[in-house]
Length: 239
Ligand SMILES: NC(=O)C1=CN([C@@H]2O[C@H](COP(=O)(O)OP(=O)(O)OC[C@H]3O[C@@H](n4cnc5c(N)ncnc54)[C@H](O)[C@@H]3O)[C@@H](O)[C@H]2O)[C@@H](O)CC1
Ligand SMILES: [K+]
Image (tube, rainbow, N blue to C red; front, side):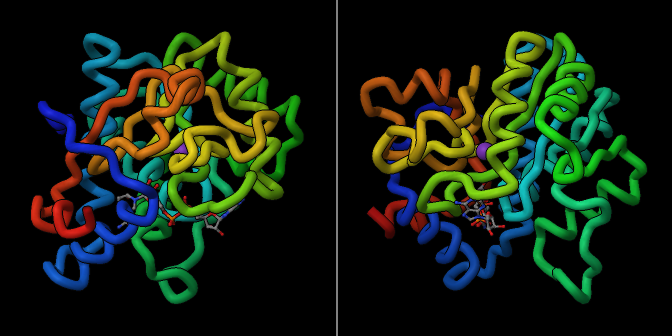
């Protein structure tokens, strides 16, 4: 659900503290926050499109930002949307190898039989063509990297960032939490040659501090804040 009155901005460190407090002080696990995040993104796509969105291609990384993308794919498929996952592996890791919520959501999406392509096995031109086709006249979702990185995207991310950018003429780009490659504290890309340029950003809990910077909107587009169920006191505690 989008927040009616967006809360005041938070730094990346503060956002991470909110997530930690949810778990450690309230016993609210990351999987619940991720579920709310993904469902909120599905609802946002409905409201941005003014109804059911066209085809949606979701490009996922291996961290929790990617986990949001895998969970979003499930919520869109439930609603009958034509969704195609571009995953960072041919098969998700097993529960023994990776018990976290991101891998769990990848396994669920895989077992649902959703269209699935390992983008790390593709070159830039083939990935661009595949994304343009899968998202044609619909949405391309950037779930590669969120608040995790503290520097420019490393291999193999740059290929996917450039392929998303090259597909923008065929689809609108929704960034999950933060456009990949964007420094949400400074409000500038870590490297302007390797940053997703979003048509819209769905960010969690609160706008990030850097979103108010000059030119930040060139990278984020308009920003919607998604309430992921964090207790208000966990948010005020980090300010
Ligand atoms: N409980 C939580 O922590 C929640 C997290 N959420 C999502 O999780 C995101 C943060 O997740 P993570 O902390 O896992 O971070 P990310 O998913 O942003 O990035 C971590 C992944 O990227 C890799 N990585 C780190 N720096 C890199 C770089 N410079 N280049 C390439 N790869 C790099 C890491 O090896 C790891 O696989 C948020 O932005 C949000 O989307 C949401 O699901 C809400 C709840
Ligand atoms: K992202």
